[in-house]
Image (tube, rainbow, N blue to C red; front, side, top):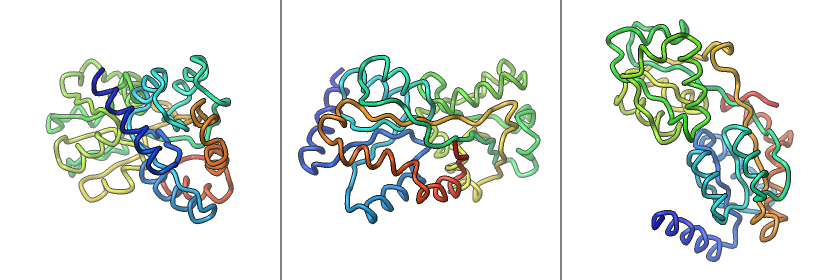
Length: 248
């Protein structure tokens, strides 16, 4: 409770100091959103503060009245919950479709063959985001279950707080296999191993939705609404594609 209160105070101080809207964004979005926010600022002269983390934790903070203006989730279910709690200033909109991929540092294992390679005894630790709060973790868990591997590999699973933590585990050699977001894999994981898309039958693309929050609609409606529209604009489509996302 004390930690949550301190986090809220820091957010309030940030908004008072900068006068900028605060965007709560899923961890998988960081590579793409840095580019999108910079492009938005160049085109409009408007700036935002972006914080990254797990969608589930952000949803819980929003329910407890965290002063976020926009919520960019890694799925649609959390924005739908925010609307049901009466915390939204508008309906959710799907801005991109994300993919979880399979990565491994074991040189002669081919991730394109799918999760069955994880049976190899050289794969001692497998990282995925916490399915309880991270949609990409749920997608990875579903892929393992669909491949009939969830029980067999359970003792090797290492849960990261969010999908960015999973990418960090892979990049630092803390695990031999991982289920990172495609956006992270193609940015910095090719140097430490190999990765491949998962079969869509095992892990379908994830609809990622954004929602204008009540706080943003009241305090920063102009900038918040413009940025939400910008996420769907033709100018941003090439950025999403470049970072491994599918378009809705």
